[in-house]
Amino acid sequence: MPLVRISLRNRTTTERRKAIATAVYDAMRATVGIPEGDRFIVLSTHTEEELIVDPGFMGMQRSDDYVLVHITLSKGRTTEKKQALYAELARLLGERAKIASDDVMVVLSENGFDDWSFGKGEAQYVLNPPAWARKQDSQ
Image (cartoon, rainbow, N blue to C red):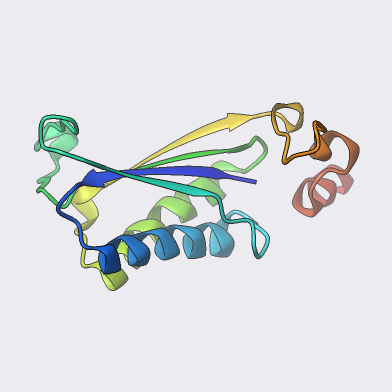
């Protein structure tokens, strides 16, 4: 399960926010093995004073359309899968929300199966690891 936090400017329309959230979910499904329905997204909007971004860091040309996507997910994805996720996020956000790739920043934070409880006071992934992890263990 990923937990996604998306930060963007508060002038973003409701329609565009929905497009951003759906694009992030679809990119994760296409690249890092997120199961259907595993959609937990916190979308936060901020004023210019609350979301401070260097417009030229790392050679980018960032605008007021800047979007920060912070994804916390269980460890185990390869570098190749992560790279595919970054590329798919930039592509889908450009296609669906008209956000330039320079305005898309992604941060992945990985943790262990014992770091998740989906409810009932249990660590479900400890008792029943996700299918993608079982496939990886058998290789």
